[in-house]
Amino acid sequence: MAAIDVLEHRLSGKPWSGSSERFSDVYDPNRGTARARVRLADESDVDEVVRVAVEAQREWAAWNPQRRARVLLRFLQLANQHHDELAALLSAEHGKTLPDARGDIQRGLEVIEFAAGAPHLLKGEYSTDAGGGIDVYSMRQPLGVVAAITPFNFPAMIPLWKLGPALACGNAVVLKPSERDPSVPIRIAELFDEAGLPPGVLTVLHGDKVAVDALLVHPDIQAVGFVGSTPIAQYVYATATAHGKRAQCFGGAKNHLIVMPDADLDQAADAISGAAFGSAGQRCMAVSVAVPVGEQTADALVAKLAERARNLTIGRSDSETADLGPLVGADAAQRVTAAIAAGAEEGAELVVDGRGITPPDGGEGGWFVGGTLFDRVTTDMSLYRDEIFGPVLSVVRAADYEQALRLPNENVYGNGVSIFTRDGDAARNFAARVNTGMVGVNVPIPVPIAYHTFGGWKASGFGDLNQHGPDSFKFYTRTKTVTSRWPSGIKDGASFVIPTMS
Image (cartoon, rainbow, N blue to C red; front, top):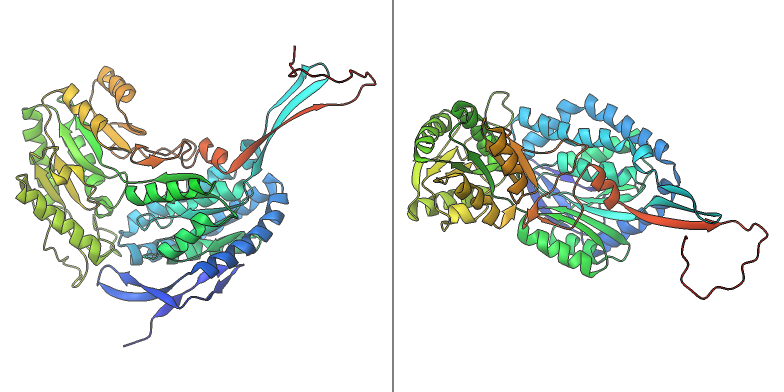
């Protein structure tokens, strides 16, 4: 058998082996075979990269924001030049189709574009003559060294969402990407080095729970950003905050899409199909629950969804025309097929079964599951309760608008939700009353643009500041407020009361 490459950590602008001899396989999900091995860090590796980052951050923080922004702008140029290369790497390890991989990269680069506005976004506030001869002003300063622990399902977008604001604010970043698809984060770091980022400011450290736990308790890590499942998000948040760190941790989702009787059902069915089955359902913003209001609406919508699910083009991830490619791993495929079996056993109506799919363009041994549609799902079923993270769509019928609204409001997750309707009053009422962090109106995947904030509520998000947008600059900086008075020759004498500005 031919030797396969070993993917190393990246430290100070170079590949770095560290001290650990533990490895994990990186697979080609189209074939189910290993394409590389990635080295996994131990505690001593974490200590070393953080030590280097602490030293490098001092220099980086001393650069003015405009100079730091120029590095981000040069990175943007390089990333756009290598866009197709990055997409091919991403597709080969994750299983996304090439067009979807390009979208993954583009949504990340848009946050880099936003973060390049750091000279404006980091401006403080100033109040002159707040009291007699007293001025008060604030400044935003970087935290120091921060950790970014990012998921497999967006190996470009989520790291870039973390890196852009954190670096622009003057922090050093230890990026711990998913060990399932680490090549794109490595290449991103290489491009940052080429763009002029000082050595040690960005480290890519591969690892599993050993590395994560070491980062969470390390005294020189000041903040942790995490995206993954809800149980792990809760664990990361609790551990990081217990050790005095700032944390933003985003977890799972069960995103609902309500379809009102007045909606354009063809438009709704197209939107739901793309949002439910795109990226093989491996998106935290994927629609996993469709809620048609009224039996007539439900019957018509299910018929349209079934037609679309049966006609999906399933193919290798390097396809330009496939609607969806394989799942990321054998464990993912097993979990999704087990969820389909459980749904059928619990009494949901299996309208379209995506199991047993082999794409015509060659995918023997790959981890393919086709679009799967269930009707008449109820809230006590595992299909509804659990985050499946695969191309499985559940239809939960609602008798009226109020019942439809209660479903996402009472669900444990609160990531994203959408409504399809022609009624502006219904849409406005829904946006105001629904208990989720992101809302779409005739938009199936309401991921905010880069200069607004992304984040879920309830079990979908832990921490009070969200990803990208203005919140990210608040998260990655501390505010320092200065109250100053310059001597005028007047001696006030000692005062023993709390100072006031009157």
